[in-house]
Image (cartoon, rainbow, N blue to C red; front, side, top):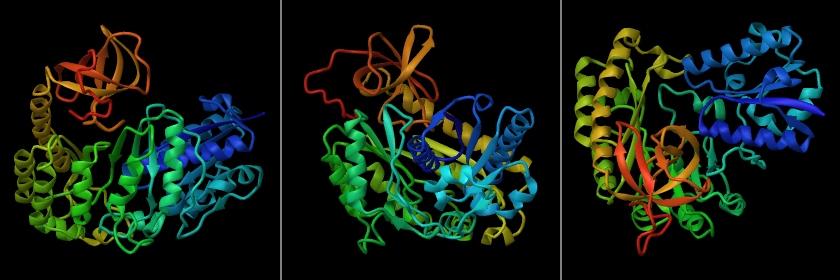
Length: 445
């Protein structure tokens, strides 16, 4: 029996690739082992988006090489975005790694492991769909497209994963139906730009049509949108978010900045006035939750630009924000701009923005105390009187807050009515209640 450890690094889109790798390997007769030192082969899926992600990958490769040198591993395979970006450089840097495999060769991984070929990739990977060996029990990611057509000045994704390619809608719906049959109730749509879905296949954005069709699938209760683009939000999509009960009043809308100067340098395709209009439209939807991300320390970001961003966050009171320090990436247009700010300055600015958001988040969560909300139970926890953890519609898994739940005999991957009893800056605490009259499991309030 061939034993393999598959190690995942990166974003939810990478996680989908990892689940596909697991399916391919399972079909080829591999047995999955959690600890690399107990397996024969280690397979590492990689992220190359920013420098810190690459550093994490290098460190993990070194750990695996040490195990191989001790005789605890026979082979190491490195897969994914980092191979697309660094190619032969990896061959020179890590001679102990047996195989470096690009995105396009996912279905051939079992035979590559048996071969002597060290590196295999394409410069512009195609979009291939595979069965998945799902690793989650209460939610599932559903990839609706691959690649990106936005070409932001700081980003290498179009060069790593190719131009934007939508998945055919019937194929997506078949996978969603298969997910629903497993008992999973939350489906999370992921893409490099979910709002562009269908532009290539159907000549206009069709995310709103896709959501309507997904909402008709029996068993799916929550549909969550990640990775939408502010320049591509459109009226039909807003109407579906407002009116379709299964589509959660939650949107992930990476803004990256708010200063017109910085947005132009980033090549984002919109200005502050466009952002304000989109936020107005979204915040007019009752109970709407907005997650966004910002890049701190982009080249030429002045103190005035940063203060404009802080004031904007205070004004708009987002539910969740993420802050990334600008990473200067070779072969991107932004690489040739004047150097970014010193690390110390960027780090201090991120701290200021996150402290601002922490106060906003704490106020928002305190306002929920005493309210009744639907909560998805994700797992068990030993936290004093709290036995389970889960999420309301307000929180995406892995990136947002949690709900710690008191009570017993709850089933995982089920949605229950809960009363919010207390809150911290980022998490909620709740107790199960009897369902009020008219309560529906997918209820967002």
